[in-house]
Amino acid sequence: MRKLKLIWDFRGPNGHKTAEHHVIHLKEYIQLEKLDINITGVEVLSEMHSIAFLVVNEADMKPIRDALKPHRGQVYTS
Image (tube, rainbow, N blue to C red; front, side, top):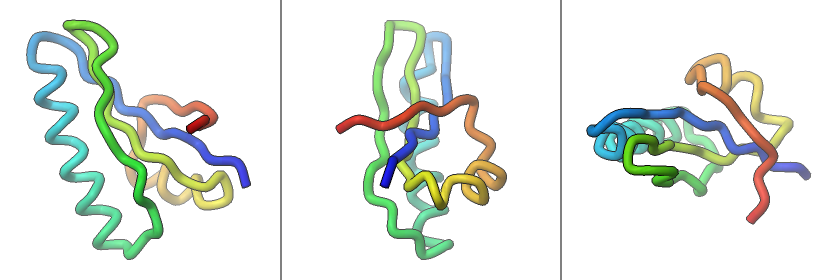
């Protein structure tokens, strides 16, 4: 089954800290909804651009996307 990486972009001098904080809320959502998701994280793309992400099965993506409103997504490769 294909996995998708849902991505939230955070820019500016506080982008990394904001992305780290956003992952806390993503993990809270996973627990609250009792989802079988264990890949989340933060990536620094540049000094002024970081992302928070979570990886979902393609079949489960739509309700999660609609609830969390990521900025973008891409196919996940481990």
